[in-house]
Length: 408
Image (cartoon, rainbow, N blue to C red; front, side):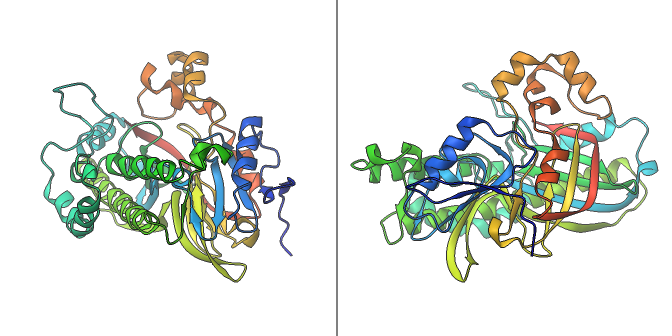
């Protein structure tokens, strides 16, 4: 029998909330938000909560929300299909140049990142002319996108094709890492970019509009949902699946471009082996659990079916982990998607300085300026405590440490 290490929050008029958070702090606001979500009448069995849990918009980040006959667009969120990809190379630490700034520059030139806002300015985080490799990956997405925009023309006015193969901002990153045997890995984190955000925002608005008469009865207006068989349910499923495919293709393009940049800097030929899957951690899909077909929404959680490989990144400057799922049914076969924020971005910027950032990332070739203070390692939970809390969900296969980190 598996030792589950979870605690259960129970309430009179809602599903139980099972939390794998032993030894990890959980803010009271996150607990309250979880209990609100668990009150929804279509929750299947219970909510499963991962150790990186923290307050989110609509639903709590780090939660697994199983539903029958309904879907909550705000639970999926606006970074639809956000996730990770990691590749192990045949290179080792001594193959890397002594000064890693040239490698960081090569990656930054290969992949648009960040964002420029303002009238008349070209967004540095988007392609002005999409390269051939981007067009190649866009081709299988194009006809389905047309079907979507024929129904919802406002989605045409988004960054779609020109955001494919671009990184974004915030906690999205590209890293060169070393494992416990000093082997070189490439790992990155990105999602469905501008178009996924537009799809998420549009359907959250539609759900709230459809439920206008009932919105006052919801525990939170962001828990507005589509019932199976309703006008927008099928369209939302189709749109979400497209955005998730876009996100997966996006990570493929970025990975290929980073590997090309790496081979331009390191002339020694190398091979790659994809040991970890290209895995989403903000998404919804049909799965079978406890003998029933249900929808599983993972908002900041990774699928951890028995034997399935996954990626749990730490913060900028902390360790990351390549893991293998243990197939723990109580968690709906899930694990955390990272360390999880310990404080908001605003709080981090108030509390820490550029000097703190320089000290915390002394061993990493990365940006060390005021714009990235909100990503300082101390703004995140202790990744070691997070991993200990989910020892019944995954086993660690590799431990990685960053040597180069590119952020938008």
